[in-house]
Amino acid sequence: MSLHRHNPAELSPPTGFSHAVTATGSRLVFLAGQTALDTRGEVVGEGITEQFTTALAHLLTALRHAGGTPADLARVTVYTTDVPGYREHAHELGRIWRRLAGRDYPAMAVIGVVRLWDEQALVELDGFAVLDEPAPA
Image (tube, rainbow, N blue to C red; front, side, top):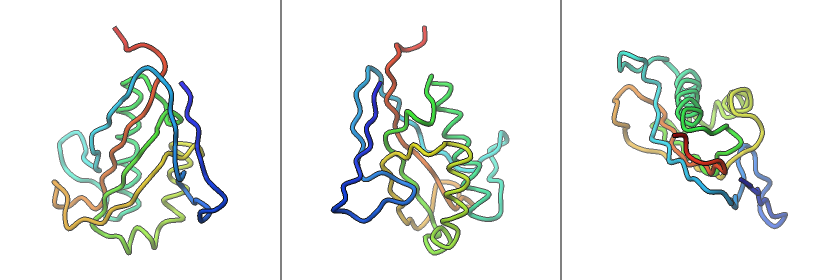
């Protein structure tokens, strides 16, 4: 598998994302939207940073179970009901990303939404990854 991140000098410098990612590999992993749900199906975490941490951890758990690593992520979309809060905590969210997922940033977008499926959820992450190894038996 090979992911190549493209960040042209003609575009604004990317912070916490890549402008484009090309991928070669034999297996795509589509990751469902993850929020800060606990094992009882209840949203945990009062603020956006706590919920982002849990949602990202859930996304990475699903990816690991599919045989991937954070470096395999080609695309992640963040949906939030609080864009101003997301922007306000962007540096902290970046530190959380680097701690959990490293510095190989996928192509990303943050999209403001009116609400998420779970009304208490402030943030949801989904994405896809490209893996080179064969699917597990």
